[in-house]
Image 1 (spheres, rainbow, N blue to C red):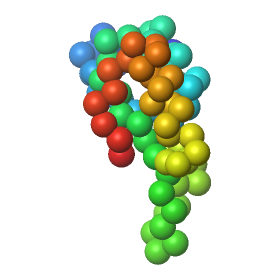
Image 2: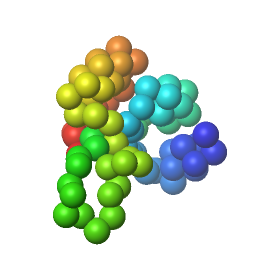
Image 3: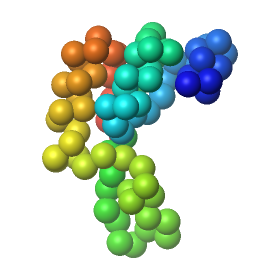
Image 4: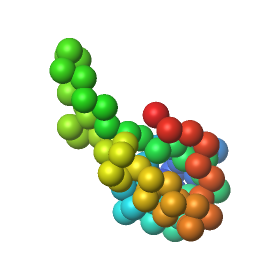
Length: 80
């Protein structure tokens, strides 16, 4: 919450989300942000497996998260 308020105060508008909980916090504390849906990609050759910690499932979860963002009136500007 505090980091979202600090980002808003500093003029930082672009941020990522990968859960509905993050969307709800952004709507409450930084509603004018431009948001990017962060998806998890499995890459067995990657040195660090960030997809295990960050991102949502692109087929099972992403469509619903995009719909949730639209329903909340959030400004989705991309997918990464």
